[in-house]
Length: 98
Ligand code: SF4
Image (cartoon, rainbow, N blue to C red; front, side, top):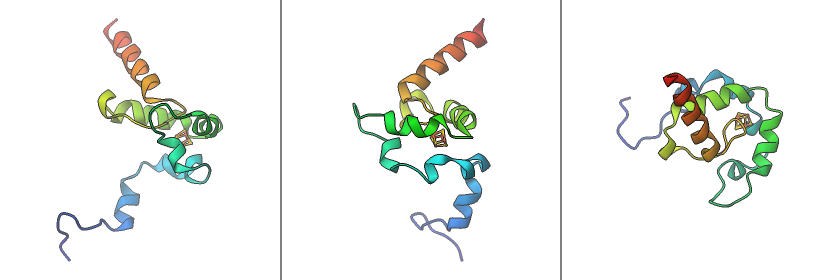
């Protein structure tokens, strides 16, 4: 059956699009999803505490740094805030230029 714009994608297709490391993500099982996408000025501590012991933290951070642009970045990924990732991207660009 042909899908049309606006149709929901079947779950199995979405699962195949996700990076494999996300299967080990602690945030899939622990914490409130809203903690990982807090509003402006809200506490990032609960999400960051979960990230601290996540076995795929490095992969998660690398993914966020590579996949998101500063202006579209949001939420806690790899134990970092959007502002922290913005600084990391800037440091990486400076390092690449040197
Ligand atoms: S490091 Fe990434 S995958 Fe792990 S809990 Fe934090 S946000 Fe989730």
